[in-house]
Length: 311
Image (tube, rainbow, N blue to C red; front, side, top):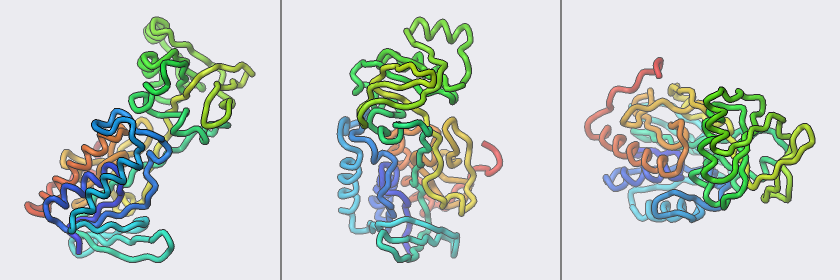
């Protein structure tokens, strides 16, 4: 039996596994090889790694982790989990088929989320290139050119005032709330344009973006479009275990306490799956905390799990 099984081998999962490995615990890392950031050519704002491809960052970190002889790596998808004998049994389906089971005393879920993109013609093929989700991650690289924000979700109007620092900004309301007087004044002062006609299609040869065609036939030139896709758990393991979720602005995320423990004792979580804010640095930091506390729980026992009924 492993001391801990970490499901997910990207920023959060590797960070958690590293702490457990350095505590000389036996650790299994399971990774399906489909990180959310695989669509991006470069990561930005990540201390020490600015401009590097996310997969290169992950691969280098994985090599460092696997230098510890007490770490085992399993390529495949964790498809099922159950509680048994004071720990957990995880079923792993390999890439080429075939399933095996592994046991662990603690479980760290760093399974990430998947994005549900708006069904607009030309949008999906630009995801991670000129259709983006985070200005702090990618806004600088647009180079100060015109940008759009696809609305219809919470905080669209607030984002418009902020995004103007990265370039001339157009908010496409997409049927969302109209600005009130104070918001309208701020947006006007920031030079933000409001478009009420819906976006019908993205224009240009993907992944480049020349602009958008509106439902009324007009064309608005932009170099990048920021969207806030709905996010859903990339794995069903937490739901199988009965872990509680909270509702975030983009979708559900796992409820955890300060120790990164979920509402199921012995199950810790980190990364995008367990946070309403999605960022590589935050995911790595949360993974460190999950690894710390999973190790300490092996020594001192489990802390009380957070309530499953209150957020």
